[in-house]
Length: 376
Ligand SMILES: Cc1ncc(COP(=O)(O)O)c(C=O)c1O
Image 1 (cartoon, helix red, strand yellow):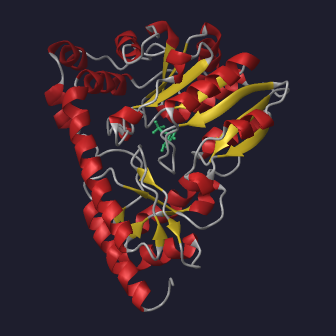
Image 2: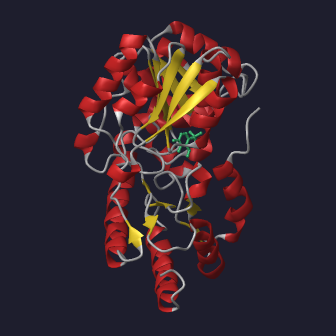
């Protein structure tokens, strides 16, 4: 059975009390009008003639072709479209893992990456090295492997730390997995959102025949309301098994959303740079804020993905900090216990146009608390 999804449950309980979010996980949203104005003639004609029938379970072929074109080694047959990365994760993992298997999950991570494997087979959590800037330690991963390890789960740029390993380390991980015939399940929903483009890692599906890459329109393209994500895998069996699980969930993608996603991909040169420019400007402001209050927070600048994970240097538990901030300023940030970690960190974000307002309210709160001696 699946446990409570702590982070989504927390958002459900507290989001309505917030007037501004400082923890949202994607770039600024793109409106329908703007998307339609960017559409090419072919997609616009498809949109106008769209019949809302059940669609192809694997996803609309032109969309799969466009997604496959984002990779170096992938064809449309090796892509399956899902209702968000959320559904791609559950279907692909359910298709792959059997009760006799063992999985290794690199944490911290988005909870489904950890809870779904744990609901299917024995799972070992291997932590990024917090004391060393959330680095990926291959020796720890290797030590966790067993003869029946079928899959290793990773997520870079990482939610929530924003860390990205060096390319050579990722390729060493691929060699380790290859030498034991282990799948590498790679949540790449923040790929393309590197602060420094030189930090971008190759897609796992491109560098490893047993690599599975998960993508989404929710983050880089600012379109979470579409609920469109995908899985790309070179082994036909991986895609077939995932579709088998999808028959019990969404059955087929929302065809209106698929067309809008196709428009977004074809217009990515107009959409993505604006979102990324805003993200980089916001990150600069956020870093300056944490430098001003370096007595209260330890800030490790994220390398990508619009999320950051400052540590509270105070003895105030993160849950209390987030609740007081929400009460007094209407700003929502997330406490680290939602990631199964000690309650010492905050998840913040810097992708949205509302970030400067949220940050100035956080600053007001911080100054007040600091003066009142609450958080020192
Ligand atoms: C790492 C990660 N994977 C998957 C998802 C789910 O994304 P989607 O909106 O595509 O379902 C999220 C959402 O925040 C995420 O952060």
